Image 1 (cartoon, rainbow, N blue to C red):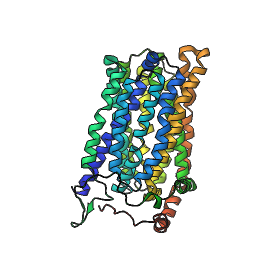
Image 2 (cartoon, one colour):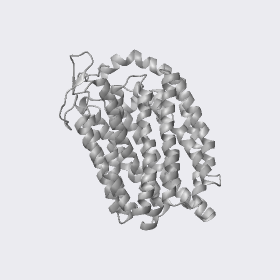
Image 3 (cartoon, rainbow, N blue to C red):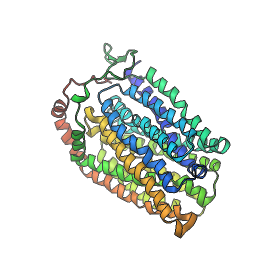
Image 4 (cartoon, rainbow, N blue to C red):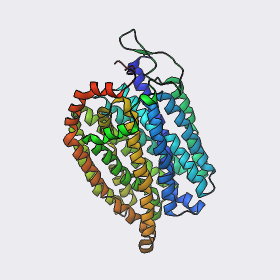
Length: 455
């Protein structure tokens, strides 16, 4: 297949993988209240299930798998991990107590750990600097589609069949998509052949063992951490990602339970409303953000980060009104606007990371980003909300969750501030990276560089 066509096909397959990957989290949020009732759990235990349990091995395994992805067959890694998380998602339907469900959620986290860093590394290889904001925007749009499909599907499946059957039905399709990825996607490190000036891929067998360099020749994890933290722009982006993950996850994971408790919605209607708000917002946001970056801020990362920072700061007010307005339709409208703004600039932010991180440590850097988002966001954000809701229960009763969510809304201003700080130094850091790239690459790579795709 021609390389120019294959990169769009690869992006489409990764898009579907992310849709299935993200549906699990959406479904879990929809059925929290039913799981709480059936298994007799507290809000703090629900916070552990949706946060810490999922984040624990996601973070640990994410780093290990990303180190593998920096020198191995990234397509094979995406395929294998997709099978793992699909099996564990389906198995969640068999849980009969808190501990069993906790262990199964840990298994889901292990499987999903390999998707993001390997996929981001592939996208960075296939698309150049000007194209990456839009390519990443398409990748991020998958989470919006998962919300559009997942909230509605999970809500009605739960209402008709119950949450156990729902998990089983949502988990199995991932196995088929993993097979498609394994059989049809190409790893540019191993499968490029020349001869026509454009580059074609020959059909080749996948390999979980084949590497372009040994892991011992790759940069050590400590070196990667130092490289990320010593770069001012990367440091601010990592801080932004951590802060927004904490507050965003702490809010969205508990929003379905809030609408059930405070507005009395059933899971069917709840799923439909969330599908519209998160689906349309999550699709339109990345699309508009990527299109804006490509047309008005191409190769201008300073402007991209500055607009993103201002937009995130505005979410402090918009998100607060979601929990203050008395009409649930108006609340969902504001929620859709919040999702649109929050997702619009993930593509440009990820592109900045891809630009500033050398290829030899790109997947590991993305895994560190996912680790921060998972441990701080999923691990602490959801747990903090649940614990805060329990703490406010004596004073506010069933409305305790509303006030717990309101408490988190000012965090968006904090997240936006870090993007604004990153915008002040990104041009300088990119210029320094251009001057040092050749020498840095020779120092960090003990083995010859892997073949690059020619466009």
